[in-house]
Image 1 (spheres, one colour):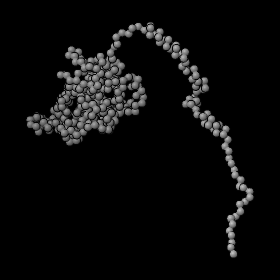
Image 2 (image 1 turned 60 degrees about the horizontal axis):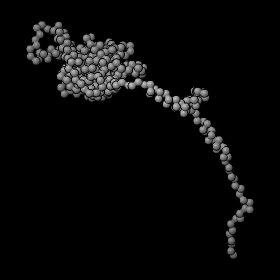
Image 3 (image 1 turned 90 degrees about the vertical axis):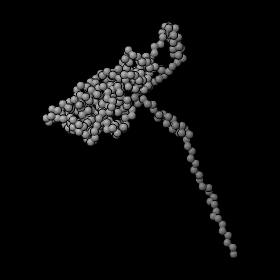
Image 4 (image 1 turned 180 degrees about the vertical axis):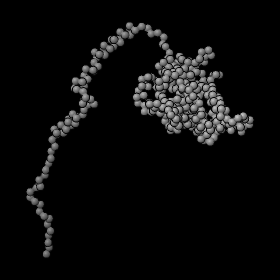
Length: 346
């Protein structure tokens, strides 16, 4: 007996199939809707009449009128005279080395260098505007070449961050945005309105470079401008309601093999003859005493530097002799060192 297995019979009625058709018109409307949603930058601020630029299109008639006007102007223009050279090529430049000055020449001179023996060289920057003061410069500083043609030879300097600018407009804008009210660094001394800030040349490189460029305009022997990382700068300020205003500074090496406590010292000309230089020198010796080492300024001293140190030590000796015991003796090295030590302690 054999059994035959048969597959189930297919139903006679077919399975209905559903077909979906997308409307082609809807696709076009969606694309058009996306294009309509794109708005201009000033659509919400300006009306349709204000956004209309059809009247500003340059037409062929406009070009023809322009060419006609240019031809008439060229015919009526007089014959030009000889051209005038730029100011940067006509002013006298400081020679690279002279017998009376050891200061380096500007880094990027604007023209041929001419040395004159009778007339003094013309400075590229004749004055600076520093806060409320208009200060004349004494020497040329290696500022970038674009500062050789500043209006009236005046350089504008911010008295807080020492940023230099070419015009009054730029200085006013900078004053509105500048947030600095004192030198960067740490305030290490304060006595009434006098404050001294210690500024690291490695941490505040731009400020220290600007400070060196400022001092070069008043120090003939200044030769360090941009390599400020190995130095510490001690900036003396006078504090008022606005901020800590710059008075002067001195710098020294972080590691001096000869125990120099001053590398460069400068007081603004408007602040000189007021005792600020003596205070800076006295503070440099105070730091040397705190560091427990003998300090002296780096040689050679400038003319004003030598005069300042001579005045400082004259006053120090007079104060010592005023309070010294009877019959003080200066014989021998030990006696001199003892007197100097007592003067520093006082």
